[in-house]
Image (cartoon, rainbow, N blue to C red; front, top):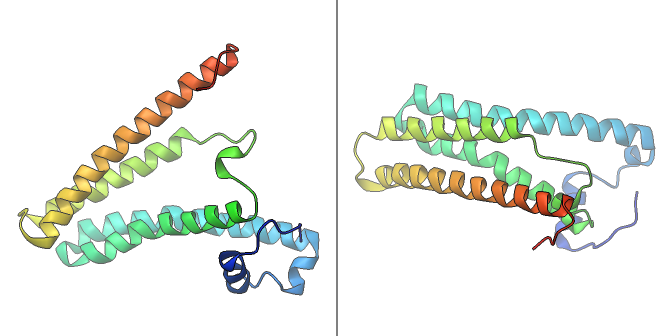
Length: 170
């Protein structure tokens, strides 16, 4: 394995959960193939869970909302853990050279988010109580999230244009 950058409690716990000390990881080819296979499985779950969440809300109605919300949030939590582990090992997600986010994935996630929020609003009927407040919060949060993403994309484009023109990055 590569040299460890920082072995805090998080990295040690992840190593135990992932059984990273297994002799299986000693062979470089096995490790590479396993990492690729794990990435494929992770991506499948990143897409499958929110799709199931949207379908659950639209088909299952109001009783399915709390469970669907967990399904919708789970990929974000898993992604957070992946990025946290990489950061703890010295790899910053924003610092990967030559890797650009795919616009299609962002648009697909936004469509899933809108479909989920619309389904929650549809099944809630009224805006009273916990569920109604949650529905309103989802819609407001989705709108604010889209605005934040749009602003970040525009700022990133402007910064990239300035850098390519030889200007400052701030």
